[in-house]
Amino acid sequence: MIRFSKMADYGVLVLGHFARNEDLQASATELSEAFHMPKSVVANLLKAFREAGFLSSRRGLHGGYRLARPPRDISLLDILRAIDGPVHLTDCALEGLQDTCDYEDVCGSRSPMQAVNQKILGLLDGTSLAQLMDETQPTTPQRS
Image (cartoon, rainbow, N blue to C red; front, side, top):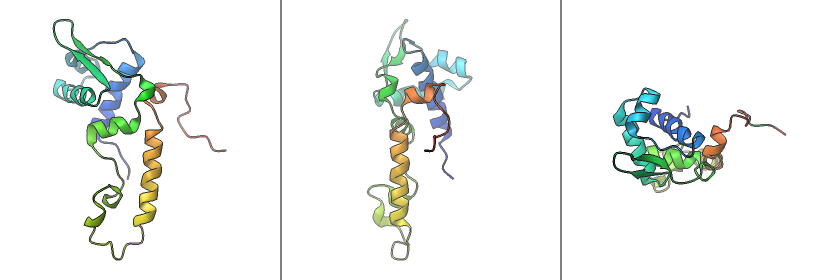
């Protein structure tokens, strides 16, 4: 099963709030209260997003976090990597781990799984935060 982590779910929720309100400046406390999440979880997400360059921060009485990049320039893949690290379906699809599989000599699915992995990464990379927050976008892909 392909599933995002709970932190990734929370991250999209928090970063999406900034995307919908691009002029917003908010603190970890304010966001924690707004989303009924532990402040430590929100603080960790904000730190990860600041380190990834998605948010900027300002200290002090009137400080807080705000978007540092337009939502169209932040992909879902960027968000997932900022929170969970490398994204991959199987270990053999992750760069640098290809030679660690005990079944490499008998496995016929390595190359097809790597191809599927690349398609999924392409989809995630091609989906911007702006698109995720655009409620007018279709929620399912259109088939031609």
